[in-house]
Length: 492
Image (cartoon, rainbow, N blue to C red; front, top):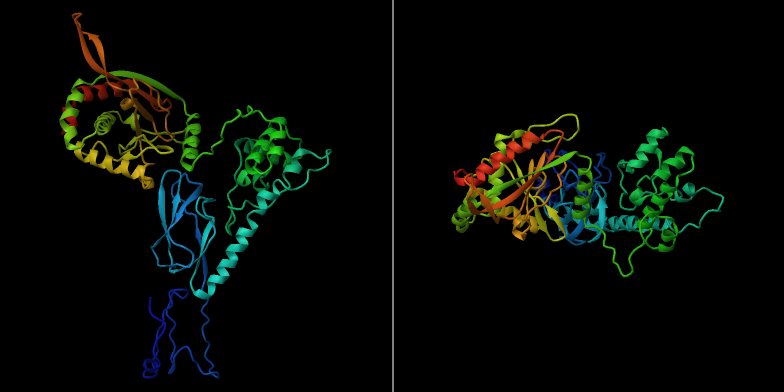
């Protein structure tokens, strides 16, 4: 940044136009002629002195992935009062899959932290304030204080008003609090969030859902809100749902929540309620979404004697069994592209040009699927090295979005735990997922009736029946079995 402090001698010796650039608020130079320093213009000068106004900028919660709706502050790298430079890491945010550093786009001073460590905020909500000058720090702190002072009012308003007379309907009594959720306060437009049943009722009764104020958690519109807007009495299930949603927000008033009728079973004495982490919530959402896809499953036994022998040879070179299986699956998918396809809208499907194998990995507090991109094109040793790097980043929660959400086919291996067979749930947006069990000695007979013992593993594949049919999956598994039983091609 060009310095704005110039000596008086330098200015007085030059009467030509001089350009100053102020990176804080003026993007283009302001030329003018002067024989004095710009800080001491004559009182009777007719020139218009430019007024430079600095800004207090808000640091927003970023969208770190396409599925992220809110983020959790893991830690603030900088403290209030620290001077920041453009591109510097300021805060670590936990998304639904990873922890990522968030950088500042401006120079300035971190004047105030709005969302503290361990707290969550919706995408786009302000989490901190950035001042450009020392004089603005106090103003920014006052602005942050006003935000935090108004934040507790909303949850309190959801439980503090006295109940209405018995003659009033339940819906108006619940829909009294109108302020927006504390975390969602922002100057831009808000996204309308409603339950599926509320959207269905709004369409059925021809009610503009955008004009309804939600009373559920974080301003979610419930069926009772829609029925109240339509002027009809809420049904019993709707009242039960609203009561349960109000209970999640108004934890300070358990008496009201438990007094309302509920279809949930009573809690077991001595039990502990543990809320989902951000990652667990994302997994839960994906699993529920998978229920809308018609799937079927096909199992296939595969002999692994040759694969086990190859593994013993390449293991000292850093090759893992996961890399061997991923490479074999990728090579089979190259011959059966329909199994690598995906259907997202229910009206068409897409043949993916890349074969990206996502492999399920259990980490502390959740599950993630790092992606081996272009697994069919990488040699076995490079694939193994890439896999080790992905696992390390996954366990330290440092994966980038394209490293966990770009899979076209998923591999889940529980063989190392001794599991001989299991079914896997199809991830949304993919055509198939392979579940691999343990390789175990099995007695088999040949065409002449002689007995022998061979190692076999059972492979189960779950597929989207809208695009993959039984014959497609059977042919793919036959190809996969041939590659595993004759694994020399894996090292080429």
